[in-house]
Amino acid sequence: MQERITRPGPLRGRIRLPGDKSISHRYAILGALAHGETRIRHYSSGADCASTLGCLSALGVPVEKQGSEVRVQGSGVEGFRAPEAMLNAGNSGSTIRMLSGVLAGLPFDTRIAGDESLARRPMDRIMRPLAGMGASIDARDGRYPPLAIHAAKLHGIDYTLPVASAQVKTCLLLAGLNAEGETVVRENVPTRDHTEVALREFGAAIRVDAGVISVRGGSRLAARDLDVPGDLSSAAFFLAAALMVPGSNLVVERVGLNPTRSALLDFLLSMGADVKVLNRERRAGEVIGDIEVFYSLIRGGTIEKALTAALIDEIPVLAVLGAMSEEGLVVRDAAELRLKETDRIATVGENLRRMGVNVELAPDGFRVPGRQRFHGAEVDSFGDHRIAMAFAVAGLAADGETVIQGAEAAAVSYPEFFATLRQAAC
Image (cartoon, rainbow, N blue to C red; front, side):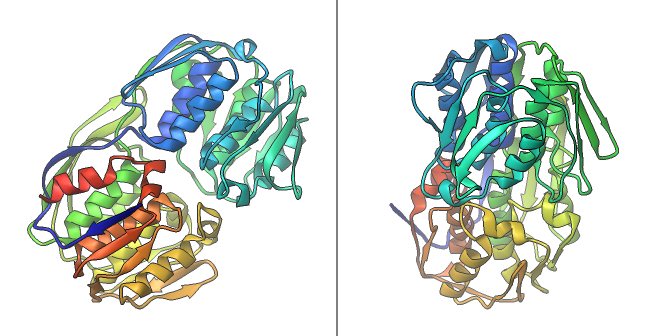
């Protein structure tokens, strides 16, 4: 499928985005592990989060979805049943990595795989620490899906993450819920803490202290009634678009502003963006609010070290924004981008060049000089949702028409993206 993008008028009005993808995954999994019915409103509409629900259903967990509301009937880990076939995580690295922590401690064997893209993404970063907890997991070539996870009894572990990864942290904390003793995860670089917040809300025995997170096995989780805030990573595309299109004034409503995710807003402010947060409040441990953004002349900036981990999902669209800034954008310490749905360093570089933008690539990042102009061109999502959406934003600032091949990839996280973009730009 292709989408055609032309330069619009200003982006104006108010929009609300789908529920946060990261939080939706976690609420669904913890609802399945809890006792009673967990009600989740504004659940993500993305295909990735649907994959998590599909896997839970295949494991015998009653799941009902009506519109954006999901009801999960949990009975603790005892309520899980051996699936009849291989679990399908689709394109979702979050599903396979986080759910493997639950599967590793079940009293029956399971197999889990996904699509062609997921089959190329390494799983050894979860396999090693899970093995240290007593898990038994086989993988293609020792590190790639499909995974065969054998019945095992788990014990706690004290593990320092060698690379910042909220998915690996979550996998181990979920495994720790069904392990003997205490599981401790240590972070040298802070990652998003949605798992810690959600575990506390569901009643887990969890402690968090200066980068050390510990959970005790055997906690009885209680079902909850929850609202998922709007996805800040999805909001990034609309914030960037409004900053780039003259005359824009857009409000994105009810967005998650978790401090471990809101580095995006701090970075935009440091670039000179006119961005304001309105109506801030806290729900179920998560901070939410409205974000108002105005067209701005921005300076540019550098993303490196801990900031890279905090902005890893937003880097493709920030690369687009950086090309139109005064000073450009430098990204370092981002080798993790090469292990996403695509090699995002390569695919960002390829599409920027197709649109006439200069970019210098490095093994762990890139440099995009500022004061450049986009020219309409045919670009490719390469099957990556964030690449599809980032270059739709680039098309709004381009001379001529931009054609996005493989635009359907956006549905992984945001099926309504192009419709919302047209709504905001009309």
